Amino acid sequence: MSDNTEKPSLPAGVTSRQLVASMEALGLVMSFVAREPPFSEYRAGRLVMALKHQLSTRNHVCLLRDDTLVGYCGWLRITVEQGERWLKGEATLKPVDPAKANAFALTIVSVASNEYLMPIIRACRRLHPDQRVFFKRDTAAGGSRKATVHSK
Image (cartoon, rainbow, N blue to C red; front, side, top):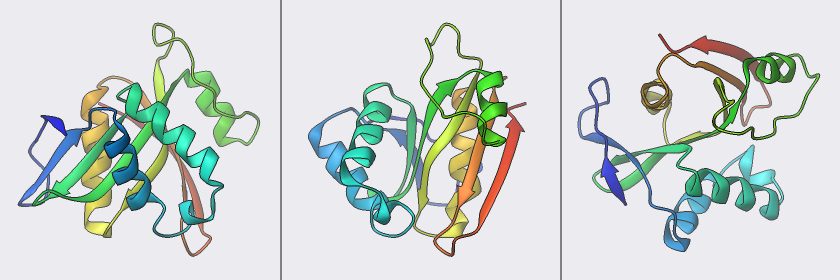
C-alpha cells in the first residue's frame, strides 16, 4: 500500500489510500468486497476483472483503520451523457478515454460499517473535484437507489 492521502472528515483513526496494483492488493480487495451480497453473488471472473481495472488505473480508494481494510470504493471514468443514460437503464457503463471523461460512476462500493459510507464517497470525490459522480446503490437486502452528485 502506498500514497497515504488522509484527509479531514474521516472517522478518527481512519486513513484513505490508493493501493499499488499487485496480486496482493487484488487478493485483499477481492476478499473484502466479496464477503457479502451483492458482490458475493457475482461471478468471480467479472468481479476480478473490474477490481483489476480499478487497481491498475488507480480508480479506487480504500479506507483503513489500524491497517485493516474497512472500505473500498472503485469507479469507472465516463461521460456525463453516459452516466445519465446508465441511471435511466438505457446504457451500460464502458470506460472512456480519460481525456474525454468528464464524470465518474461508482461501481463497487463496500464498507465494513455504514459509518464508513459517506467518508469513502467523500474521499473519492476529493480525487475528482468538479466532476459529476453517478452511482446506483444495491444493498444486501435487495434495495436499490440511484443518484447523481456534483463534486463541488
